[in-house]
Length: 308
Image (cartoon, rainbow, N blue to C red; front, side, top):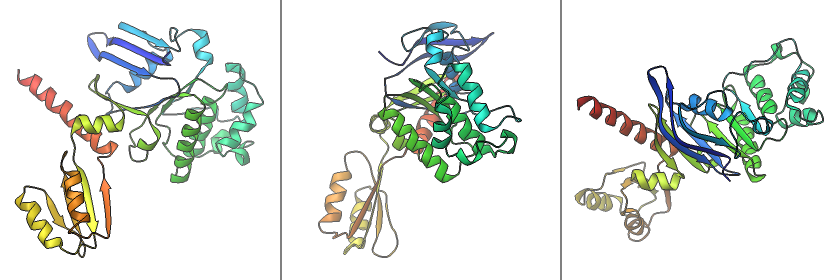
């Protein structure tokens, strides 16, 4: 059973359609990255899963039930983009309040405060917390009750690099324990190592979904090869230019060449053979590159529709 199943969903606000025939699933113990521009439909998708909206058309199932089923809500954790708490309560009092609301064990409170690095600030009032500290408290709130499904909306907002890495380490640990996670973020660098699949939304339509390897293959974006310590860099550059490869010198006795699909192994053989390269780096298209590709493709499709 999938943790989330969205089939043929259209969502309308009056005469405006904000989701068009959305089909999306989340497996047990899977981390899905949900990406898109502002207004792409990410927040609407999250509200459908949370049971805050009912689909205008189509089917939404969460943990095998309707999203607003009380049993679902007890097994679901949610970290919104903008976390708001009672400013006069302490961090510990805040978590104890939410634990009671959720029916979670109060013994979890101190464990979670330690897990998110707020033990020393547990007695302080939330109004004295920085944005990053409130974000970490929000994450602790989302983890109350050991949820089977966790929705994280811009979880790294306000976090410094160390806290961001700690958050992703926690995501990895939860995934290994079987928690299903949907992670929305505009900050793409650093995310790709911690998701199983990416889903890219634009203008209310799903543009692409799959593992990064699948999306790279589908998009056909080239890899970038950088080599240094070459014995015959000039000869290689001349040969590659003549063959139509995009290549340029970098540093001393170094080259950078764009490896279009099907040419990577041949270029590597030349670099390792006659080129005598001392060091080689291969840069695969990043999540950011893939996101840009699908966003541009979606934009071009809208322009084309406008001309029809």
